Length: 376
Image (cartoon, rainbow, N blue to C red; front, top):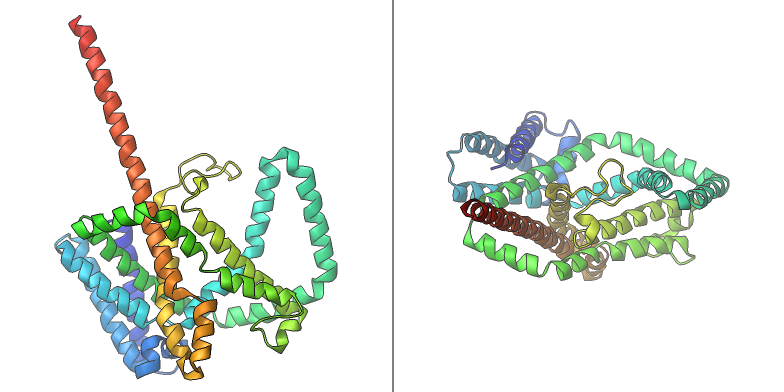
């Protein structure tokens, strides 16, 4: 079992146990109860019983992590505990707030991501340097003139809200991390089984259609947010006509398109070798974990949010449930992304094994040539 994974499981379990105990000792005196009340389990039994379940699950995680460090747990037992804690920490403790948190954090990071891409294009492609620089300057100038007030209004609205919600955001991400980490442990524990080998072979064989299917997941939301730039905004209400709100919709849409591009990277060449415009890493093999860990975490987040999202919308009627199922298709997006990541890992592993066999064959051939030369 990889030590970093066990360390992550121990850390998240300890923090989750502390969070649950704090809510049990001081119920309703902080943001913990509000976050737990919005989870699937919390909406059914309330925040205090949910805190009790979270505490027990987290303490089991602490004990299991310490035992696994000593390598005394059979893989099957570790796998079952990982599945139970993953479902409790992810599905039962999941909610719409985790999905919204991830979406807004990605949207807020988009300007920085775009800026870094522009800088790298200017650095690595001298022929395009003048054109890209001119377009960038013109875009910044036009944006400052046309979107300056709207941008300041948007920042003035989102920044205080983000600062005020730092604790709930951290708690939501903690619950997702707890569930995702333990499901990762379960996956590693089952890695040598016959069922896992068959699953890996199937996911690797179908990794291209699975990846394309997963890449379609954010498309409905990304397209819907783009309608906020038109006179006919969908699902935006009367506020969608405000310029700052339209700018917010553009940021949220850009996060969806980034998700589509990164997902397709699981089957494109730059998902195996860093592209040449990347600093320091250009041309080097992409570590499998660099794609598998974030991809698996996002797949877990989406899967965890699927059931709470649909159940939470049920009181508003079947039409609302259908709309949310189409706009936020976490019910297929999360599992499809998980299978796509699984296929990516299987593909990279097969390439590594083929390379090792080739190297071994070359070494045997060289040894035979040396032996023949000596015999002659």
